[in-house]
Amino acid sequence: MKKIMIEMPVITECMVNTCSYNVGSNCHARAITVGDGVHPGCDTFLQGPRHTRNAQQSAGIGACKIMGCKHNDDLECMADSVKVGMIKNEANCMTFSAR
Ligand code: SF4
Ligand code: SF4
Image (tube, rainbow, N blue to C red; front, side, top):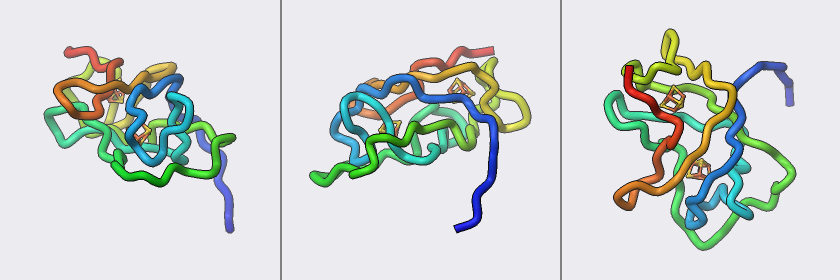
C-alpha cells in the first residue's frame, strides 16, 4: 500500500459506542467525513455488532461539508481536535460552532 503523510484534526473522543469503528469511546477509522451540508453528523458512522480490530489507530477528520461551522475553511476542518457524540440518536460533531 502506498502511504501519504497528512495533517488533520484528531478525534480525541467519540461517545458513539454502537459504531463499528468505536473501541473504548475512541474512533479507530483512518479518517471520517462529517456533514451532509447542514447537519454536522458523522457520515462514517456504521452501526453493527462487529468492532474494528485495529484499536491502535487514531482517527482524524478527512473532510467536512459544514461550511457554516467557524472551524471550516474551504470544506476542511481546521480545529485542533474534535469530539463526537450522540445528539437525537445521531452521531454528531460536538465541536461544531456556528459562524
Ligand atoms: S467518529 Fe464516527 S465513525 Fe468514528 S466511532 Fe464515532 S461515530 Fe463511528
Ligand atoms: S468542528 Fe466544524 S469543521 Fe470541524 S468537523 Fe466539526 S463541524 Fe466540521
